[in-house]
Image (cartoon, rainbow, N blue to C red; front, top):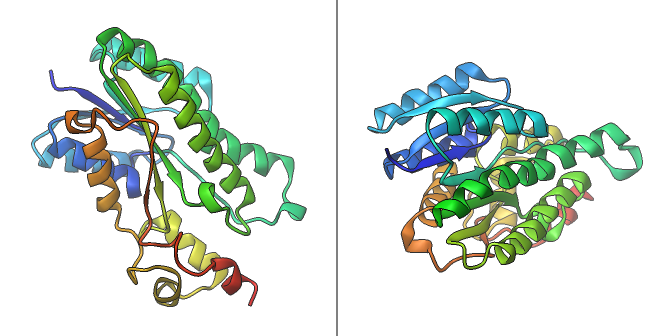
Length: 258
């Protein structure tokens, strides 16, 4: 059987793009979703159109019990996960002074705790096989912080620290751990930021990127597929930025405060 790749939050957006690129590289794709079953089925349809196969697993990866049930099911039916892509994420604009405890905790649970729960569960199988890839999707928000997204920024910064620490813990086991820090992308979640703030996408891209465009999810998928391959065996503990130069461009805070 082909190597098994589990992509969390794979029903749409960046998760779907990653699943499709891994399918093109002959992985068996486990498509995790929380509630968008029809969208997840569409991802599976597109996976199969690329000559690969896969399966759906519903689970809220912010809940450790559901994560354990998902991995148990995968292992029983298909075997240990070879590649884990921690992609599930969620963000909502809120200033710190008006943020309630529930909103803060939800950001941490979905964006950071899920990475821990899934990685912890995937590691035994990877270490036993002496081969594995854990690829965590983070954000430039975790590298520079974004006004109005303090909780999201904090959680994504936590993913960076977790990635670097775990890479050291599994040194010499054949398992690599890396993160991909994505800038604003052409996804429902990425575009929702502009809808909420009223910022024109074209103006933002012109002023606050070096490429003049937002990130295409397919670009993220291609990078993840490389990190999941044997060609990337010497890359571990790294945080690779794919943001169209947003980190180097003028600060978005200036526009938000204007």
